[in-house]
Length: 216
Image (cartoon, rainbow, N blue to C red; front, side, top):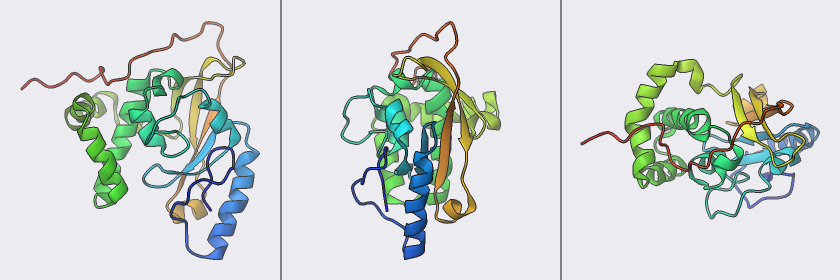
C-alpha cells in the first residue's frame, strides 16, 4: 500500500508482492503517524512510499509543481522545486550536494532503472546542476570528506512554517529496520531542534552557485 504524507491514499505505485508485506506497510504507516517529527519512507528512486502528518506539515507552504512535490519524490523536490530553499536551509551545500552524491551512487547501482534515468535526464537539462553533478560533485566530496554525504547523523538547517519551530536545525536519522531494508526502502526522520534565539536568514538561491560552472 502506498501513502502520501499524512497517511492518505496516494496514486498507485509499485508495492511489494505478498499480503504479509502489504500488511506490514499498513501497520508501519500507523507507527509512522505516531512519530512527532517529520518521517518518511523512500524507495530507491526516492519515491515517497509512506510519510506522516509531521512531514506534510513541514512542507505545507510549498507551491504546486508537476514533478517535484515533496510527498511524491523527495529527491526531485530537493533538486527541482523552486520553493525547496524556503524550507531547506543552506539548500545548495547542505541538501542538494549530499542528495546528488546519493543519486550518483544510485546511478551506479540502478543505472538501468527508468525512474533513475528520468532524473538524470532532468539534471542534464539544467546546465548549472549538470555541471555540479559531473564536475563539482567529485571535488566537493574530496573537500568535505565522505562523511558529509551521509544522511544518518547529519545536522542540517531548515525553516519550519510553524513559528514554534521557525528557522532551526534538524538531525537526520536513518531508522530503517531490516524488513523495510529487505523491501528496498529507507526510512529517514528529521529530528527537529528548538528554534535558536537568533534565527538563520533564509536563502532564496534556486541554483547550485556553490559549484562554479567549469570553463571550456
